[in-house]
Length: 170
Image (cartoon, rainbow, N blue to C red; front, top):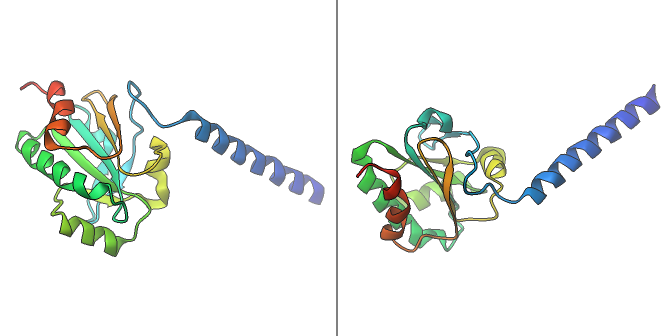
């Protein structure tokens, strides 16, 4: 019986490692794919379930307070959020990756970021998207399909708008 438990545990461990290896070789989630559904609990305690926002354009930005290239982009993302906010059909979500809450909150305050942001608890969201680092941004259309993946920071508000505007009835 003891040998059976040991072998069973070994087989389970190998299966877990195999799944992890397969996922790591798949690369990140890309253009044309349905965005992985996730739940983000913001720093203010609100819950955002991605699938609840079908019908809206969604901008998911992975960032961290320790990320130097995230900082210039933060101002442009906030400006884009404020530009689209009155429409009510564009949702911005910031996913704080491998960070501590005090530093993350200080970052949000420093860059006056007001759109919803929350921690990536147990890196579940970043694993679902299979991100390669920060910043990374995914623009998702009204049907839940990823239409743009930005590795690295956006360079301007105009660049961000150039990916969102075509998805909207302007």
